[in-house]
Amino acid sequence: MITYVVAIVVIAFLFDFINGFHDSANSIATIVGTRVLNPVAAVLWAALFNFSALFVVKTAVAKAVATGFIDPSIVDPNLMLGALLGAIIWNLITWYYGIPSSSSHALIGGLAGAAIAKAGFSGITWGHKWVETLSAIALSPLIGMLMGLLLMVIVLNLFQRARPSSVDRLFRPAQLLSSGLLSLAHGGNDAQKTMGIIVGLLASPPVQAAFRNETGILHHLYLSRPDITPPLWVELGAYTAISLGTLFGGWRIVHTMGSRITRLRPVGGFCAETAGAIVILSASKFGIPVSTTHTITGSIVGVGMTQRLSAVRWALAGRIVWAWIVTIPAAGIIAALSYWLLHTVGPSF
Image (spheres, rainbow, N blue to C red):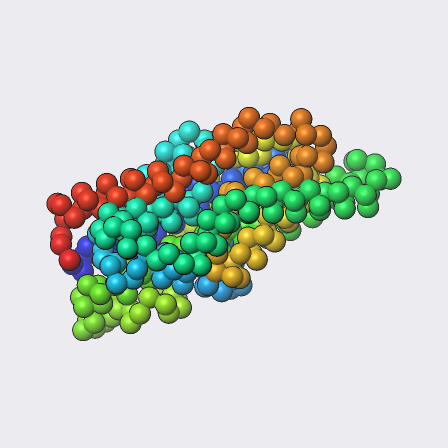
């Protein structure tokens, strides 16, 4: 039992690493697409700010993931491992094909699929967190798009008499700041989902019973309830894992996000990143596990629309939207199959 639980915690950190690897393009695509930084420097910059979220962003999203989507009383190690496998496998599929789907919603879908496989639809905690999250699927790219469009219009009006070369010189260093802010927002929202999974696992009834009387280092794996602030070792592990994942990067998606949706200049990159960061940080404050991928894609589209509608490759954007739509059910199906397999051949709880 103890070895099994520790292995699932390690797999949760692996998911966090894959999350950073898969979503690195969210943080660096615009700054690479505008050629302000080369890809290697960009991933180093993004990883630094991913980890910096540890000191800035609170843990409302982690608490939401641990308690807001499925009934904590049905949680056991097989369910959490099934949820993680559903999210990881779907992430790897979409990474392989260069599709910027949402790691966040893959994890939520994995949780739902594993919970339904164990307890039916009664295992789902139907409530405001589901309403907020499902609403965010539709609203976050739209808000990002409107915010990117608005910022770009304001900047274009402020600098309408300036030469393009002068504007580029001004916004190249400004984009370093906006890219760092977006990476901080990405780390702050996405790393907390892994924290929520680990807290939910360790506070589940069978795991509580296993670690309640442990001493030494294993005593740190005992949690009294799932709605507590994640322990420091969980926060450090999650932020380290997502930062390392970002460091290795996902170059296929960098190309899609940075240049194939629309061509960007530094001023456009600044507006897109700033808009995305504002939306994501606002969602984190209210404990909503919003998709960084959805939001920054919407922001990039909004910036592109200020040139002309034809500047946006709508066919590609439509393909990305379809990936968003199928992510929760696809990850849920994979997670349900994973749970049934684990329940059949693995330990019983």
